Image 1 (spheres, rainbow, N blue to C red):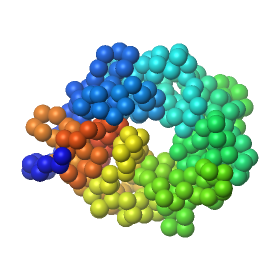
Image 2: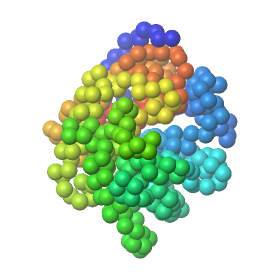
Image 3: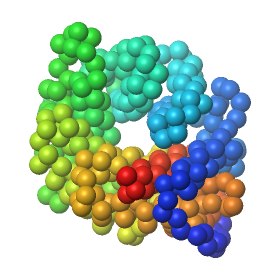
Amino acid sequence: MTTTSTAVTPSTTAADWSERADVAQRSLDHYFGTAWPQFLENSHPAGTGVPETFNYWWLAHVMDARLDAFERTGDTAWRDQAEETYRNIVERNGGQLFNDYFDDMLWFALAILRLHHATGADSYREDALAIWDHVIAEGWNDAGGASLAWRKQQLEYKNTPANGPLVILALRLERDVPEAVLQGRDLRGHATTALAWLERTLVGPDGFVEDGVNREGDGRVDTQWRFTYNQGLYIGAVVELARSTGDRALLERAVRTARVAIAELSDGSVFRDEGEGGDEGLFKGVFYRYLGELVDELGEPGRAEFDDFVRRGTDRLWETAFDGEWLRPANDWSERSDESIPYSTQVSAIMAIEQRVRVERTATA
């Protein structure tokens, strides 16, 4: 059921949006929080969707979202929640870090590396490196060109969701981890090889990024899956390489993809509903996260068009999703809805609003 939204006064102050980000963060617990070990109901209302599924990679993004709040506020309670989410993932995963999906593990490693920086605990850095080693040992191969497979059961199926975070993680590890700890791991080599494969195989002349290739063993590119998070991952990968090399000309590739993503996948303010499977709820948030990484590098005036897009989208989101106390977004942020939503949709809204805070703080700095 879709209902008419009520008008909400627009705001452009960082303080107001920081309060709204807190509302969005607390709303995740309000609507989805439940007893351990489930931790979060998969959907709201509870019992809809597939209640018993363990969504490993959704929880990795919950860690990221909580760390966004910690970095914004300095409130260690948010960092504690990120650590609690880490423990929930490991416990529900049988006490181990690894699963069958290379993209899932890389999302977890990226969040764990941030947790290392937030806490100073070397054990988290060791976990991120352990995931890196496992992914390379089990999934990196030459099928279709040297790159990373999507999952252990389909080693010849390659896609953006696996290779994008591999580039990002590799370059962050290279910058963040002492050489004595890295012990000769070829992080830069894997990153540049995976990015070259991605650009050769799945990035079009206009910068639009396709999802994957050879899923059915026929060498075909899955052009029917036009998802925001593929665009965000490529943007993030290029930005990380630009940071690592100092080659700012690379940023033009990321700008091109950001522009085509907004033109092709949004209505000019918000991205359309990308599907009802649950995973799709996170896609918008991934785009906003890595668009934020891009605008941090661009500075003025290059970032203005993207800041304006973030403002339009989060204004629309707040208008349609805030009920006066809590934030409950629809899968389509352009309308208010009381239909069932997965918590992935809530996490995307959190990531977008956290990015809005960063936009407004930069504007007044």
